[in-house]
Amino acid sequence: MIEEFLNNALEEGNTEDLIGVIGHIAKAKGMSKIANETGMSRPSLYKALSKGSKPQFETIRKVIKALGGNLTVNMRQ
Image 1: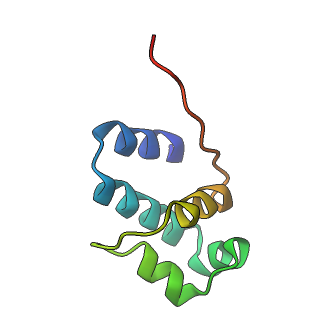
Image 2: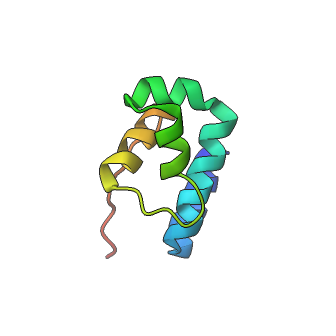
Image 3: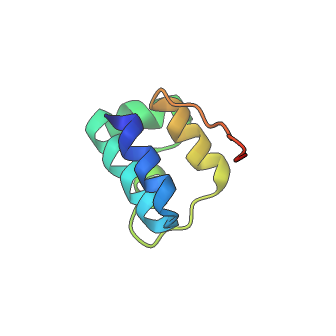
């Protein structure tokens, strides 16, 4: 279900919505746990995933990894 949620947000192409989705999932999994796994503080994580934020790609990569995800690219034919 999480994978589908993230993929739908990616397909829509709206960066702000994608960050919001990642934030909702991180909250559901536990921000303290995600903060520990990313090496970030909870306040920094909340700020990075809040509406209107523009987190660095590395932050998104770390959070997705902490959520159990993996970023890959599939080239269209």
